[in-house]
Image 1 (cartoon, one colour):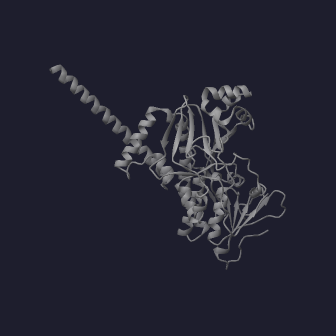
Image 2 (cartoon, rainbow, N blue to C red):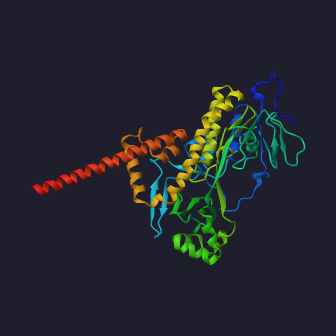
Image 3 (cartoon, rainbow, N blue to C red):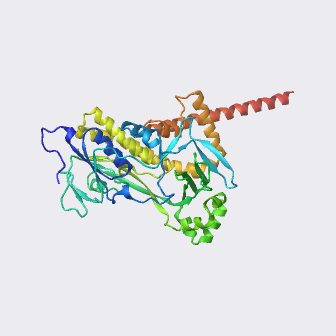
Length: 440
């Protein structure tokens, strides 16, 4: 089946774009291309996911930052999505003794939102149960499982996740760089039910139980449940083999969570599924000729600890759209420029996500971390354009990720210099006072 445009007299507005992967980034990409007038064919390997039954309390929580909001705004979806969200203003840190301490994300008015659903942009053809087997780098022809006829399009957009079938063809090409890293930690999800019809904890926080080498977080759902996710080394999961050991483990590390989740529910959820792995993917380039481009996790999968996986994917859509404006939708020019612009950012946010896991599980409990946050916020108040907290740059601006990293390293040096000068002055004042006492 040939969806592509071969007529030289045809305009680019009539070209057909095949989006492989019907997840969040794939659907948003489809919206962007549809808005430009392209015919968009979305191919999703799963059955019609619009008809899927969602287990209560098991819906996927997604953090929408400024980058994601800007991407949604461009296709008129921002208000719809935000109306279905729960604003979160701060982290809530749960200490081992049960005390809770909030740490704000940023300035007043800077909140992140949880997405629970998305609207489908009109004029897009959705093709479910289409599992990609292969595609041709020469013709763009795609072969799908159980479908004999090849399908062709003018552009293939790979949005099919960390284990992308589209990307496999890239691996066969010369000078394509690729790496994947599994972290030694896995994750397991547990549901915290409502209590008397209300949230068991304050819903406008990201709740974190940091325990150095592992941690648990909890995010609110619209049905008044919380999704609790335990992140822990696989060898630690393997030590918890019975229901009694689950309770013993939680009594030792998360005692305040047991009455909120319920002992029986906790034992049931802990063994519902095995702990799942987490992978970080980096590759370059993101395009092949003028036929194909990788976006979202297919280009830069990351561990979930900065809440930027979806937002980076959404920003991919916005960046590609901006480049298409600049280069008049000429794919032969647009795709190389997209790779040039986006690869440094995709790799930078993958590294930051790794860093933030260490911060969330270890540093948020330390006095140095709290002091550093205080210094950052103080300097940001007096020099708002010069000193900007890392989390603020990542989550509440569209500063390019690789520039965020460079600025962050510079700020870290400035902060250390200020602390050093402050310590030196304190020593000199103390020493001067000591000398004065001696002479007196």
